[in-house]
Length: 228
Image 1 (cartoon, rainbow, N blue to C red):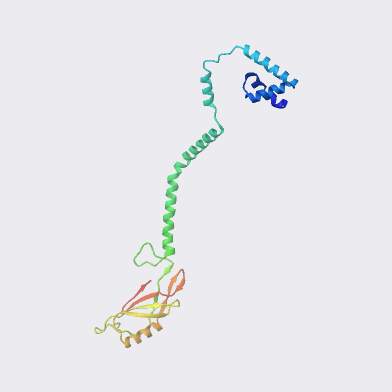
Image 2: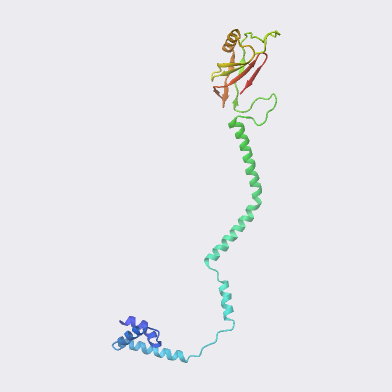
């Protein structure tokens, strides 16, 4: 054992606070080390002086004062939580009056967006007004001018049946096919229909201003109706 190790165990050597093995090691070192003997003598004198000191009684309210001081002590984490709580309450008090108007504005914007998307993208008008022009960007095919070929049922004679047919157009407005929905369908009528379809003028279906194939036009012996 060296002097440094011995000096740390000298107080325990005096009051028996070290193990018997350490006590023997310190005693063996003291037999050969004069400086450690001097240090041991100083510890003995200090122990005698402390033994003659009268014990002071603590104040009666010492425990209470300790508890009060402990309750007043605030850790950094507690300060941070208190500051965060204050900031949160401030923002809540500031934003709560704006919550209802902001929610109403968002709902209004969503409703307007749905209506615009429904009218523009889907191409179906929200309301139908009689005799009004379509405002959407998808417009159905229609007849521009009908060729002046007489058809059975169009002259008003009582012996002929009305004729109703549906024509399908391509993107150029030409009739690619048709079918008779009602009325005569013999060979003479079919030849007259072919001539009329060939020399009639149609406007194809328009989607965002571009002609589209597949538009249909419904024709009758007395009037023209347009179907999208």
